[in-house]
Image (cartoon, rainbow, N blue to C red; front, side):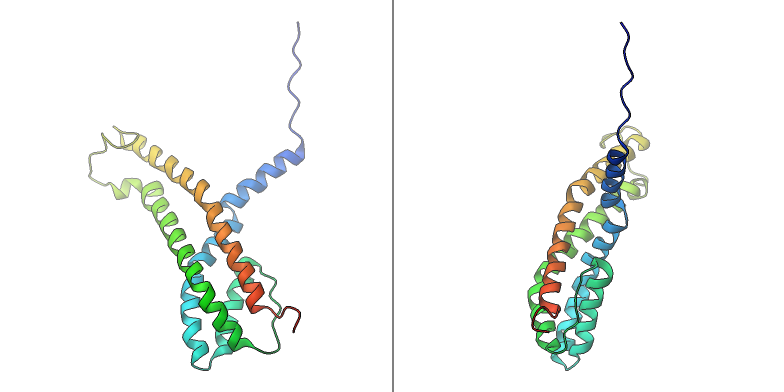
Length: 178
């Protein structure tokens, strides 16, 4: 009895797997994470700017961030920037706060407990830690948990920033009224 070798996976499957990894840890994720962290300070600065008569500046900050980091197709309106900036600021700040907190805690925990675990636990007894009794085992275990957390929560960050992008397009864009 002879066994035939398993056929190689089609090229499309390999390309699809590469896209999945890129969406998890590639530039797409970095831009989304950067937007989640930067949108809160921009939103908090834009509200007083708009109220103090600098609505064009507030609008440019909000629109520029969404266009550059999210690739949001926001068509600049000919009028109404003050109202658009204020409404977007008021509605977006709670979502921006949640996204910034989640993203900051997620990446901060991964850096502190995943990548830099030996520095975080320098001089501590790791014999009872996950993956112990050696530092290498504890580091590997914490790094694996950090990667799992990233894999679970990065899609949540992407959903939040997608919602922020849709909100920006709808509130900051010209739409049909121009």
